[in-house]
Image (cartoon, rainbow, N blue to C red):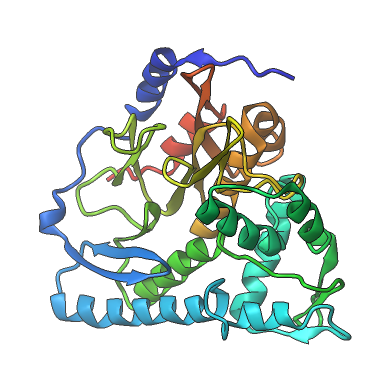
Length: 347
């Protein structure tokens, strides 16, 4: 099925109309806010807050960064001693393996998005992720190798035992890759630390994936820009949001060209290959965990499958720009304007 698109100019105008009720004023200059950054999870994590007590801000943000470190140790696909890779190494499991609260929560939410996205998001694609990293380094892909490792990929091979908080992996050589969801989960966890300690007007940004609580005083929301296919250009659209999250997925820098075809680093678990349509996707959701996972899923689903899938997901709003015949075409979920209006803050 082909989804009708509006041209870029028309949709952009429509979106600015939708935003006009939100972005009545610009967000406060961040120079008037407290901010701190640290490297974590392969990116720079930035915490910004409207807080009158610099000492409290420093103390609480240190705890928030420590929480992120804990989650990275559990979920990392690069650390051989991470909990998720230790679990993967036990495949096939002879009995369910008990896991920590954090790993359980991530896997449970990942499974929910897997089902809702018809398999477009799947954390068991780790064997494919590992092979495609090699392909990109070598500048060449091996279709036979893709078929070999696909036997260890599939959410059906991972069973979650709710009563025991335990995981079973049914085939050998499985490798769980939480790269499409762990960063969002860490953002949510950091924001929870800030809120619990009384910092309730805050933003956590991890490489462009963002979650926010209440808006800075006197503002309609935290100002976020929506990028197009060229991330070096200024944002195409701007929104002001509070108490929600936004995540962006795209392949501007990581891709492989093979025999005249361009493959994204974002893999389709259903085929074993990188997505071959150029797209940038921005997703708004109630949590960064959901936004992160759905941004990956929608990138895989593309413009033809996404509208039907999101019909059953009213809590998710999305915007997409896709390159079709070398021309940028845009699509927005029908609920986007309403969703953003509901997540602005009327001060």
